[in-house]
Length: 193
Image (tube, rainbow, N blue to C red; front, side, top):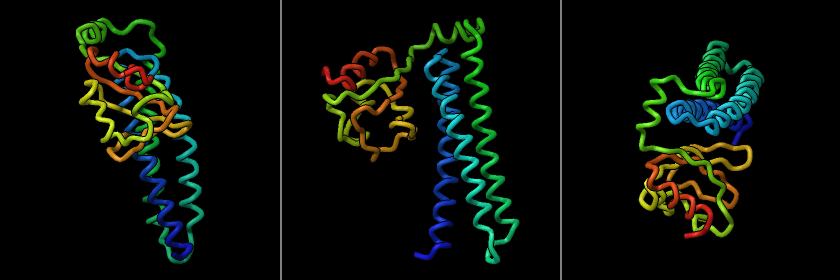
């Protein structure tokens, strides 16, 4: 594999990570607003810091790839795509800040939250959990609990849930679903099933 091919693959992978992260942030931000969840709002702001760093690294990588084989217009297009993902991330952070700034939600939102049958949980996977080592598909969390994994966080990496994503000890699972499944999810993640 040539050096140019490796650089091109790195640029593509970084752009996908920017896109996925900004999408994940919007999902979490809207959930934090609708569920009035400070926890989710704080996750969004942490992701915003990560997004700023990812975006800067992406722009530097694209600019460093300039040589006679690349047209400046193509590079400008890549940089603009990165800027768009950054703007989406900024919008998500603004939504999250509404949750963190106001002690009480707007009366209309308060009515929606009160009538909502959904909840959100942020849980750490215990070493004794039967989830450890399983993929999300194998874990069957929605079928077992009625809760859907929104985000999986491993250390300083946030991941959009994919069926093949393997769950590890100390992963943080952020899940949303019907309130009746909350206790089932807690037991599953803690290993108390």
